[in-house]
Image (cartoon, rainbow, N blue to C red; front, side, top):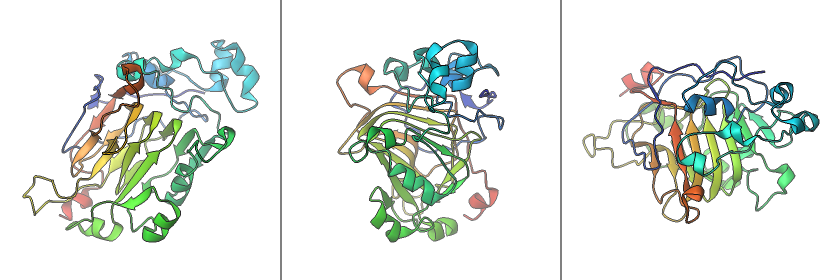
Length: 313
């Protein structure tokens, strides 16, 4: 099994350090090849890519580890759905390397800590199961695979009824003009209280109409996702885009921070405000090793993958 990382002409090949604030962006494209590994390849292939050696033979699954002999314990633990992680798999450049960001590690899909989601309801239920404070370690999800495009707008994902079930799912500032967003709503989804988590897609599936607010956690990998349809014309501020404050990903907020974050092989289409907004900083400790954020090998492109979404304005 192997995970391949095709090159991206528009990719950000240099590591973007912790204060990336892109006020009006967007990305495009997929990411990983459709022939991905059947296990959660949390970061090894991209680690090779970040070190500018993108190889179709880059592997990070339990079966690959045991067959190559890189980890003698991998074979013995594969049957239980877990794999001993070789630190070299996560040899990313930048602050995330110093912080030793490994996310949820390398897990087989059969692991009880690996969950595959195809609907908004399944994704939100999975996020409800990442909190160490309320779950035993063996039942906490460490890897969430997004296996379909997700429409996560506030109204389309259930509105107030969903908020009553999941307090981390709330309405963002309400859209004012865009006909699609007026129907779907825009949500703000807190990803918090985790300690070691990967959220990824094998084939670059899309998150629409929502922003992720990363807070009060550490050791997170977001990989190979596409973010789209989070923009409308701002008539009130004549294009300054100050009213709605929609960002695809926010790291930290006024009350909490989140350290050890690695975002890579993601695609961002045009956003209302920011692509990735680091607010309170990424500090969960006092050293660089506790605070590192790396954004690498990601594409930022104008517009939307859905031409009609832009034309509707």
